[in-house]
Length: 239
Ligand SMILES: [Zn+2]
Image 1 (spheres, rainbow, N blue to C red):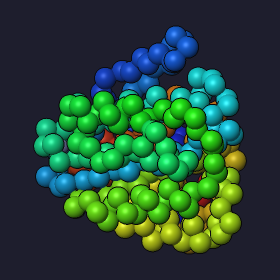
Image 2 (cartoon, helix red, strand yellow):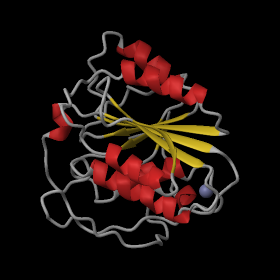
Image 3 (cartoon, rainbow, N blue to C red):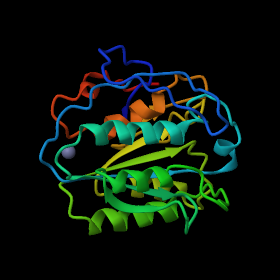
């Protein structure tokens, strides 16, 4: 397990200041994002898996957990604005299967970004399952079918999973054909959940700073890019 602290990021932050508005017309606090670096020439796919269970969709505030979709959209747009190669792709898959919010792999350029942004919100008629297994299996199929040099899987969840075989699901997560990043959206991450795995973990609670979700996603989106400021973020192995 590699654990990334959401708070250890006092690096030089450059880039456009984001002043997003919420769905209710409120203005969320502004935050800055690190420079996303330069295109590497690699063909990459970042799959975002999102959990729409009631424990995550109910808060409705301006904290990073409530604003996770908005912050994810901002992170994708931040990278899309910097990408000149057209070889960086994204996809969205929701816990509920099937889901109207799923987006198959699309280039971050042009209409592809807009499709991704439409998928990065709570889908209509979301049942709110807390089972990761089914969507993880589908993400594996997507990853193996896509001819990418590098696949990143980013899972936004509180990881209060109701799968019958949680250990088996976590093993599947560890064996995923790509780099796996768990963004744990809860104030009290389960410390042992990812121990012994290669999963990178970023805890983001409701008391975290605005922009933490966007920065966490941007770390994965820019892992392959050249001179990305996100690579300067310190890592730690303990919560
Ligand atoms: Zn690019």
